[in-house]
Length: 483
Image 1 (tube, one colour):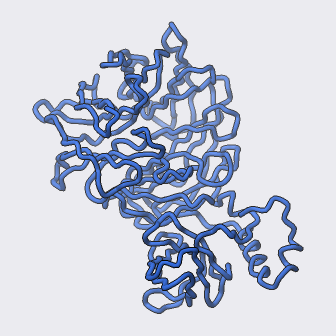
Image 2 (spheres, rainbow, N blue to C red; image 1 turned 60 degrees about the horizontal axis):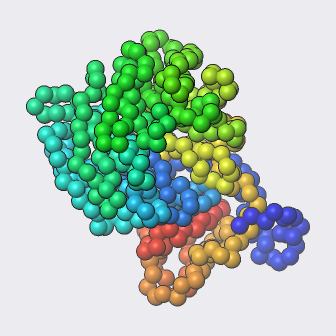
C-alpha cells in the first residue's frame, strides 16, 4: 500500500502503465471536499466499534430506518452503509459482550405506535445480524426521550454488564434507570430499576471511582449522582451540588491512575462552565472549574494530541464545534473548528481512530440533513480537524494483495476489475462517495470491464467510487474516475 522509500522517477520511468499511478498521486495530493456520507434520514445516535473483528473502528448509526453500519476500509474511508438491524430500535450496547473477539450489539426493539412501546431486547453476537438472542422486555415502563446507554463490569466477573437510563414508569410517570448483569451465556439478568433523583438523568458515564475493581455509574441531571457498585447492587452519592449539568465523562484527567469526572453546565448567556472532579482516594472528589465560550452539548473525549492526557470535544450543532486541549493543570485550552453546515437541527458525534495515523478522528451525524448527513473529519495530531484523511496524502501504488483490483486507476473511459475468486455469477455493487448505488455488476469469472455507465446507461460523473462484493461486504476497493 505505502512504500517507505519511494521515488517519483521509479513511478514514471519503469513502465507506461505507471503513468496512470503518477496521475493518481497528483490527484491524491489535491485536498478533497468534506468526507460526507449519506445514511437513511434522521441519524440521531452514533457509536463506534469493531463489528467484523478486522482491527478497524467501524461506525454504527441509528436512523429512522433502523441501525446502520459503515465498515472501515482501513484508509480513512468507509464502505457505504449496511442496514444491519432494520425497524424501530434503540442502541443498548456496542462492545464485546462474550468471550469471542469482536464487538457485539444489543438493541431495544419497539412497536411502531405513537408511544414507542418496547417489545424485546435483541442481542447480536459476532457479526451475525440474522439470528439474535431475544430477551422479552419486562416491567411497566416506556422509553423516555432521555434514553441512554453504557456498559461496565459491575460485579467483576470479566463480562460487560449494561446500564440504561430513561424509562418512564407508566403508573407514576416517574423516571427510572436500570442495570442488567451479563450472565456470560448470551443472556442477561432481568433489569433492576431505580428511580432517578430529582429528575430524568440526561447523561451517564461508567468507571471504577473507588478502586474496588467494581465499575460504578455517574449520571447528570441538576447535579451529578454517583452510584457505587457493591457487586450485587448500587448505593447513591451526590458528587456535585445543584447545577445545570449536560454531558459527563469518566476519564483519568490528570493521569494519576484513577477515574475523574468532567461535566459541562450552562448557566445562561454565552458561558460554558466546565467542572473537573478530581478523584482523591479516601476524600471523594475535589472540584475544579473553568469558564469557556459557549459550546454546550454532549461531550466526548480522547487523547487528541498524543500527550497521553484526555482532551474533550463538544458538538452543539451548527457550523462549528469546540475542542478543549488538556493543559495538565485542571484547565483546558479551547479552540473552535469550523466545518460545513447543512441545516440540521442537532449533531451527535464520536471519536476513534479511523485512518492510518495514531490520532483520534471525529464522526458527526446530522439529524435532519436530507443528504450528506454523516461527516468524517481527521485529526492532524494537534486537535485540529480537517476534511482529508492522512492516507489520502500517502504515496499510492497498486497493492497485489487487494482482492478487488482496479486498473487503470484513475480511469477515463473504462476500468477493469480483477478478483482472486473464480466463483461464477458473483454480484458486485458500485457506489459513489455518498453511498448511493451507481451500478450493479455480475462477474462471470475473475475479471470485468466496466464502461463507466450507471444502471440507466448514463455516463457517471468524475469522482471517487467504491466497488463492493455484494456477498462478502467487507471486500471493498476504491477507484477514481477523471474527466
